[in-house]
Amino acid sequence: MSSPAPGGTRPRSIGRSFGRNLLGLGFVSPYLAFVAVVFAYPFGFAVWMSFHDYFFAAPNAIVEYPFVGLENYAAVLSDPDVRQAFGNIAVFLVFNVPLTVGLSLVLASALNAKLPMRSFFRAAYYLPYITASVAMVGIWMWLFSSGGLVNKVLGQLAPEPSWLVNETLAMPLIAVFVAWKQLGFFIMLYLAALQNVPKELYESADTDGASTVRKFLSITVPGVRPATTLVVIVATITGANLFTEPYLLTGGGGPDGASASPVLLMYQRGIEQGNPDVAAAIGVLLVLFVLAVSLINRKLTERD
Image 1 (cartoon, rainbow, N blue to C red):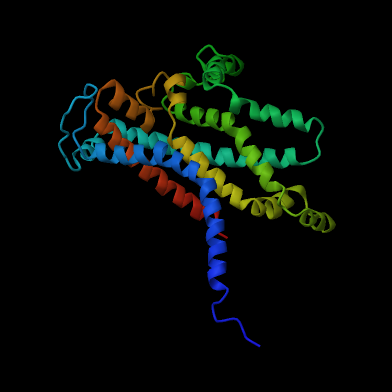
Image 2 (tube, rainbow, N blue to C red):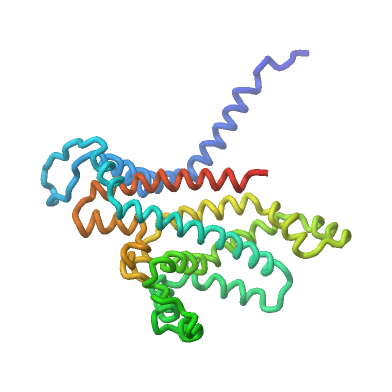
């Protein structure tokens, strides 16, 4: 009786595996092309711009862009407005990310239970996410302007200066606004993750007489930890790219730059002031900042 030659099935296995990889590669290739065209190439071009004296020229004009090394980065790092913008975004993340994670997880847990009108509440929380930011900003300006509803309710307790023109309160208020607007999306992520938490764990906890808070802390929170990592990273990236909210809510980063973001500065320096090389340097530093914060958040959320 002849035995299979050593490795006799290997070429067939490799071929089958290679075939499956080809099929998978075919499925993901449109997205890879999308990432390459929409993200990789613009980022690579921005890195190249940040090391050159780049300026806008007439279409089809042949001009040279001298290499300037780290000159643009030195200009950016010595700019107090840029340092303030990165500080503002750090303040934003400190308020926005914990608020987003906490609220979305608690609300998802509540909406995962058998509640009356559960579908209505799910749709209600998701509605701000799909509504145009301009409309949402209009509502918040009506609420938090000097003569807005919130100040009328607070009366003598209303802050002076008011919320959106207060250097201390402007950025935290924007963080709350963004958390509220995106809450529906993150609730959906947590609802999907909660379906994978075994129901037997809750039944065992009920048998042991565990309270609702204990079940939430001991079963729900560990059970959705991978989703929490995703929520933290997505919220960090979204917050670091803040533009519309300070542009509309506080009139372009006011008061005195207290709510300016790096992306808003990129627009002002690159488009309004005609310094795309400086704007590109800000963008590269922002990418490094987001990568560092995301890695730290991932380490913290995945830690046992």
